[in-house]
Amino acid sequence: MFELTAPRAAIISNRQPLANCSENLAVYHFFTALQGHSLAEQGIFLYRLEEASKNFHEPRSVNADTYRPMMPTKSELRQIAKQRLAQNVPLRRQKSAEIWRRLETLDVFCRVFAENNLMLYLDFQHEVETTRFIKPGQNIVVPCCVDDWIQPTLTSLDELEKGPFGILEPREKIRRNPKRWVNPDYIAVVLVPGLAFDTHGNRLGRGRGFYDRFLSELPPETVSIGLAFECQIFPEIPVDAEDRPVTMVVTEKRILDNNKSRERSATG
Image 1 (cartoon, rainbow, N blue to C red):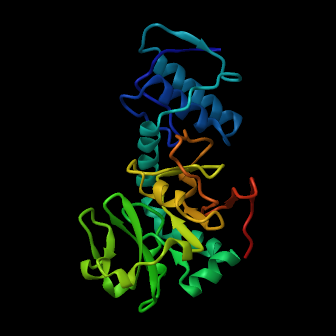
Image 2 (cartoon, helix red, strand yellow):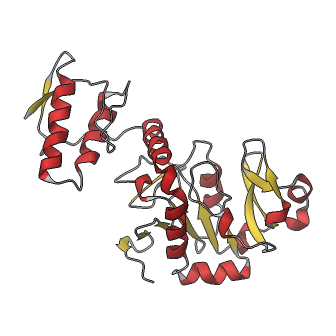
Image 3 (cartoon, rainbow, N blue to C red):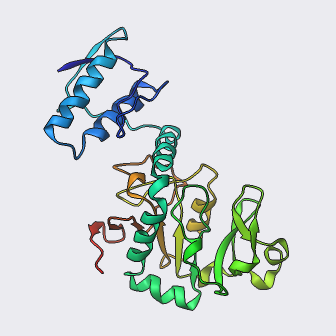
């Protein structure tokens, strides 16, 4: 047993203090940080949490073996995910290549990628890269945001430009050309970005709900694949009624096949 107050410093996976956190977020950081570490490392985490708690009042006892913290809010999880992604930047290119290699072991991906029945996002900021794996002159289907809806649009790399948010998108004359719009019913696979995913395929986006609305309108046989770095995978993500999970998640280390409710290793 050790004494824990409402600390404003959390022990997180990179072992650095995080200022102005709620107790809920701090304890979540602490327990997720313990997972996968040796007993010696766990002892260090316990010691650091005890030291942090000495600076605060109203202590209460917490049993590290049985305590289960409340799930952080979506806002708190976004904060954690963004910090992890920022720390991941030096390895982003290398890990993205490994994720793409694992993606190519999936028959469903290879088949539809060649047939243009795939919609893929164009990476932004610290997301898993996709754009550099597109060949010059290759026709692709990408999401275009029209009002509050995603409109799949046929384009190519040489027709892209940066939009208002700095995200690559087809030029305006392409976006407004109905002949370039693709019926979502014809899309067999969707590559989905996200700030975080859990092991059940639940996804945490940036909070505007574009992909949740889009995924909810797709035929049930459409395969949605979340691309994420391993640091973006959480044990559990809070889910609201309008949230939509993905069929599977591909990271640099594994493929989480949520359609079969089990995790499987990729080969090749």
